[in-house]
Length: 574
Figure 1 (cartoon, rainbow, N blue to C red):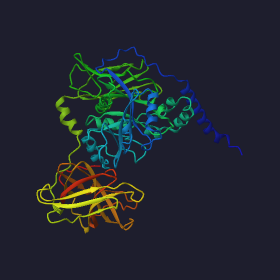
Figure 2: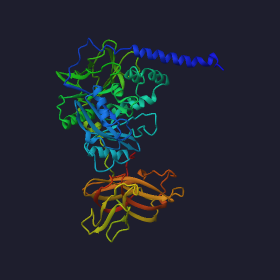
Figure 3: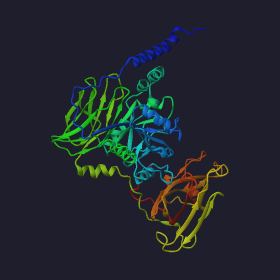
Figure 4: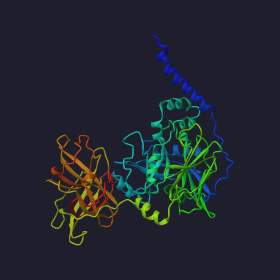
């Protein structure tokens, strides 16, 4: 039986709209970006374009590293940054592939969301799931951290720690977030057009990023670089198509040299400083955009901090022609605008950035990083402090579980493939007296031993409800991660007890480590959602393949395992 004509009307209208949009996309040509306005002077001499946040078969990407680099070269990129989930598997391929520079970082999964870690070597341990600790690790390893897909429609991908201190940057535009948020009509039309003009089809899915509001919020407190994240995973849309839609246009003081280590460092440094702008090159070529501050013959560019001065002028231009609308924003609000270019006096201290739009597009064509207009004292005192991760709180133990003066309450445990030897070293060996020395070797992962581990265990019922956390001193013969684990009663769990864990980092020097009980997390599918401190059944220190790679061998020392009360002013850490 035929459908009533009225029932068919919405389908016909949708189909007609899709065809119309498809025809528009096919007929459209890149906009004329020539401009009659002379560009502001540029202090930097080299602009390179690249894609950041790309996945390969080392995690959940569909293409090999070689497939990705070949696609990036065909797309005309100068660099591409692979960030597979929780692995540096692509590191051996890092360097130049022809004229393309491949950089390899990683995407760290934390309880608060995902972090891109750039410009660092692979550590000898796994990054912890606590965002504050992961940020601290990245900084200590000399890397740069960028929050991935901060406003994703998926709750598990969205960034949940907006107030977290630290110098992390932000993906102000993320490909995966854009595709997931696209209106259905745009998806339909893009699907129709994709086989014919893939980059144009993908560009039609872009809308104004919600992350811009979060970025302005961050910029009100501290410097924060904004980048575009390709978040490329699949062969459909292809890597090459994704690389042609949105690009990071990075500004370097000198041209690339062909020295992979030197050039990688220059690009990561520029990304960290915000010496770049984001361009939607599928709409129109964005290369040549300039945003500069000028005074008395001196110029500054994106990422720079400039002292306020009555004669300081901000200029943006170089691309777009008369159809391009340039908006100059101060602290997130438009303070000046112009067609083809914009010029205005800097109206006092603040964060200045530029958005360029083209007719017919909701998404900004160009997003600049800011120029910061602050006096040096103010910038150093307030904004620089806000970019530092807070140190762990210094606490005094109110009681001790073990000081290792006369033996230990902890016993050694391991799987059959691993080994552990525990000895008590005399007074003077510890941070404040005696110490427990733990030499271990983690076994290989096999079918018979899928999760090798070594542990110090104290199996005894305890009521810890009057305390805020554990405090202990620990050191190692290298840098390792380990877990502190508390187990409480939970009849619904497989073994009748639930495991709650937090990560610790051990380094060659003695350090006091604090573990607030509120940081402990459970991965038990039968969790009751609450750590019952009055029903603790075990306290355990464990090294496993979730903290260090299989086969790791090393030595740890423990001293003064105590309990502390809530210190005054201790901050929440996601």
